[in-house]
Length: 282
Image (tube, rainbow, N blue to C red; front, side, top):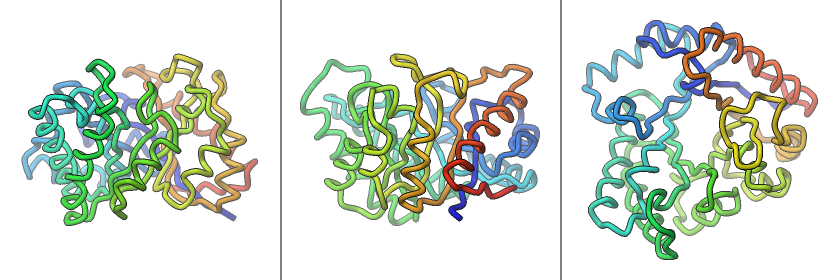
C-alpha cells in the first residue's frame, strides 16, 4: 500500500511563540508543518534570523515532535525574480540564497518556489526568461547546501499548471529543481487533475492540497469547492507516488483553528483511503 504523511500550513494554526505553536501541529494530528516566508515584514524578517533564533525554532519543533516540512518562499511575489529592474532581480536572488540558508539551518530539505514571474509589474513576455535566469543562478547554491528548490503552480497566469512548472524544470536541468504541485490550483485555473499530475510524474517532491472555487484560490472549506481530490489521488496511486501532503489553509488565528484542521484532515484521509493510501501516523 502506498503511504503518505500529512502536514499543515503554518497559517492554518494560531500564531504563538514557537514552543506553544508547534504542539498545535501534533494536537491537530499532523506530522509536519510548512512555514511561510511571505510578503509581510514579520515573516520576511525570518530570512535574517540570528543563529540563536534559528536554533530556538529548530529545538522547539524537535521538542514538540514535529518536522518542519518545507519553507514556502512566497516573498518572491513582491521581490520578483522576473522583474524588469536588475536591482529587484538581484534582491530576488538574495532571497533565494537566504531562504536556502534558513532551510539548511532549520534542517529543512525543500524550499517551495512560487511560480510568479513579476507579479506586480505589467505583463512582459521577457519576464519568464528573466525569472528562469534568476532561478538558475540560485541552483548551484542550493546544490552546495543540499536543499531542493521545488516550483509551485500558482494562481494567476505565470506558472499556472504543472506542465508550466515542468517546462521550467526541464529548461533549468538540475536535480536540485523539482516540482511541488498544488492540487487546488489545478482546479482553480480549470485544469484536469489526471493530465496535470501525470505531467509531473517522477519530479514531485511533495504536494499541497486545498479546496478552491473559480477565481477564489483561498479560504474555501474542504468539500465546498471544485478541487477534484478523488481523481488527483487516483492518479498519484497509479504513479505509486509516496511522500508528504500538506493541507493549505488560512484560519486567520480563529480560536477553533485546531478543530477546523482536524475536520479537514479527516476529509483528506477519507479521500486518500478511497484511493488506496495509508496515512503514516505521527
